[in-house]
Length: 114
Length: 112
Image (cartoon, rainbow over the protein chains, first blue to last red):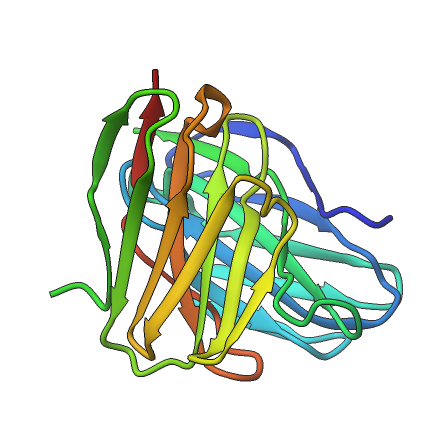
């Protein structure tokens, strides 16, 4: 995989449901994996930056895991709330080539119904 | 005040016109970036700069130019705007290393 792929494209859940999304990225020359939360009409905000295989990060009800050997990361939201509705972006950076090139996926759009 | 400020927020311009989008930051970050967002596509890198004397082309630099006037300012120019440059443009900053990016609020550009 040379691109960053996110699935699903969109997700509709009820308030209180727990959910997760997947980010697949190139495993070769891995440097870092970013997760961002992007609310409508706002700018993307950094959630996590992960660098080590097996890394787990947590912020409140949101957590993420990282597998650099197989090239995937999961983002989990426990007990979804309407304010969690947003597009969640992941982005991968690799060693070598253009150091400035953080490659973004297309995002997973989450809608949480009250 | 926002850490990363983009002006204008919205702009409609005509085909063939030159337009400049401006970005300023108070984060003190050395690294600055310009991305564009199109519906159904991920954020794509146009240009980036690691310091005042460093400018690099990104994935989709054709039709664009940039100027890093100071550590805090990074502007993007469309020399002769065309309709397929209609998009949402984001400026972002970062520190060296593995910190996340700080994004501006975006400029919605429409070329008619």
